[in-house]
Image: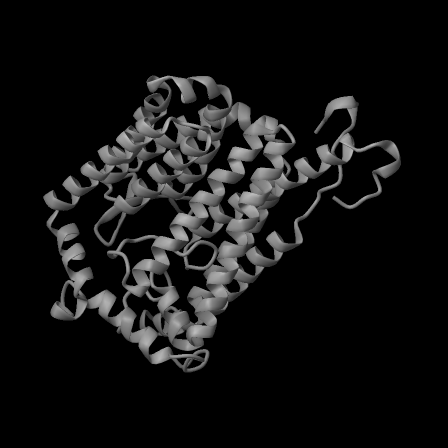
Length: 390
C-alpha cells in the first residue's frame, strides 16, 4: 500500500490492548463452548469432541480470513463497499429461494457452500459497516444539511431488513439498523431527523411484535419468566437459575448443571449463562471488562483516525465498535433477563462458524485501521523524531 511521499506501508502496527481483548475473548469462549457442548456430542452420537473440534476449525478459518482482510488497504475497502452491500442483498434474496436456503429451527438463514453453512446475515452486518462508512465519507454535507441525506441509505437498509424478517431474523435486522443509525448520528445527522427516524423504527418494531404471536409471547414472558416457566418463559428461567447457582466464584469449570439439557442453546445464544454458572460473578465481570476494553479501543482507534484526517477509516472503526457493543449488550442482556429473548450470538465467544469467522474479519479490519493511522502519524513526524513509538 502506498502513502503520500511515495512511501509504502510494509510494517503492520498492532494495538496490544486490542490484541489482548480479542484473543482473551476467543480463548475463554472456546473453553466455555467446549464445557457446554461435550454432552451434546455424546447425546447426538457424534463424539464428545465434535463441537470443540468444529469450533476450533471455525476459529482457524476465521484467523485465516482475518489475515487476508488485514492485508487489504482502506482505500480498497472504500472502493468496494457499495458492491459488497449489494452482494449482501443479493445473498439475502438467494437464501430465501426454496432449495437453496438451509432451514434450521424454523428459520431459513443459511447457505451451504462446500459443506460449510454460511449465515448470510452475519456477512451483511460486516458489509453494512463498510458501506455506511463510505456513504458518510462521500456525502458528509448531504447527511448534515439535507433530509434526503439520512433517508437515502435507510431505503437500502429497509430492503435488507425486510429480507431478514422473511427468514425470519428480527435480531439481525435490529443490529443492522443500529449500525446504520449510530454511524449517521456520529457523522453529524441532524438531531430532529434522527429522532424522527428512531421513532419511526420503534413504531415499526412494536408493530412487528404485536402481529407476531411468538414475539409477543417472548416479550410477555420476559417480564415474568417464572409465570410460565415450562413454556414461553423456559429459556429465560433456566438462564436466571444458572446465574443464581454461580453466585460469586461459580460452581467450577465443567461442573455446571443447567447446560445438561436444561438450558437450550447453551453453547450458542446462552453461553453467557454457562459462564455465570461455572465462573460466577467474577467470570461474568471479567468478560464484561474484556468487551468494554474492546469497544473502548474501537472508539479510540476511530478518534485517532479522524484526527489524522482518515474519515472513512474512522467510521469503519466507529461502526465496528457500535456493532460489537450493541450485539454483546443484547446477548448479555437477554441472558440476564433485562431484555426480551433474541437469537444473537455473543461476539467472538459463541459457537458458530459464520459468527466467529465474520467477527475475526471485523477485528482484523480494526487492526488495519489502527495500523494505517499509526503509519500516517509516523510519516507526519519530523525526520529526527520518527523513532518514537506512536
